[in-house]
Image (cartoon, rainbow, N blue to C red; front, side, top):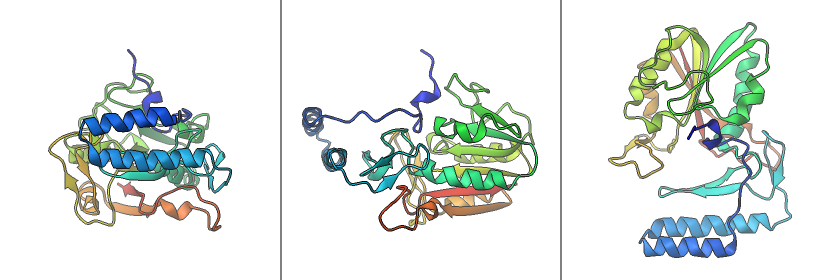
Length: 269
């Protein structure tokens, strides 16, 4: 079976809500498995999802697909609830909605043809990069089939050094054993003065990264803290941390659902 980018968040897949009956079945199953914390997160988030679905109040706007809702879909795992996470229409997450603005800002700064490499590409970004004559847009992944460079391990790439002006890498390096190897490789394939825009899951009000001895949390090896900046500085000349929530509208009664401290790290060679 071919694996495509349709499995990634932000793939324009409409949200399929749980019915009340399906929710009850799911909650009973979690109780029988003694997953009490997950039971609580599931009950709270899914009940709020049902409430939002039945509400006629409009507060949230998705800047990617321009849809409007009472609320985005609350997602959860064993670690936390991600409030107002997924757009019900295009499946963009908080990071995608923030990066939608950041990517456009970065691209506006270029006055030449540029080459872009996108790891584990999200389809919600295709309209920004594809069909632009001045952008040579390339995609890559270890598992996905519908990419330009297949079977590429970000820890050990076969791509030549100094090839790309811009690298996009969203929620990838938490899934691999050696994030430092990935950082070194991204730096290697960037041109001089090139930039890598990296997003990762974490708590950026916390200094220290939390390391896991299992892969139960969505296949993550770690949940990052601010100390990741020191790690990135080993491989890049400059690292700028951008809180993507700055792109939320200033109007009090509307929001893009971009979470506070949802960070992007702009790493420059």
